[in-house]
Amino acid sequence: MPYLDDEDEQPRAIKVHFEQGNGLDDLEAQGYTVKAGALTMWQGERDLNTIIKGVDADSAIILQRILLHTLDIEKKLSEIIANGGIDDDDEEDAAADAQSK
Image (cartoon, rainbow, N blue to C red; front, side, top):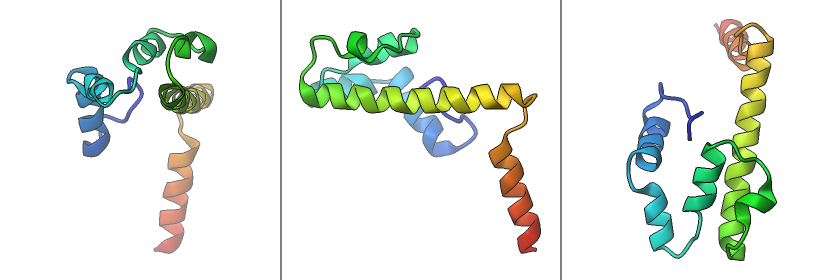
């Protein structure tokens, strides 16, 4: 959740719901054991076996998906940092917008 875009309203609302609200508790109430694993990821853990230890298969799949999303965002952030703070996706979008005009 720390990497969700704060500029867009919908991701910001989701981020607030899970980081400051009861989003993880809502999932737990639905029978998914994901809170401990998600918090562990937010603290920096990236080993899937550690994250899913002791949870049921459905919860493990949810945690795996969260981990994959986290790793993808971290990769994109690393690329932006390596490019001196320039997001290649933003540049491509700007070029496409300029061509369409």
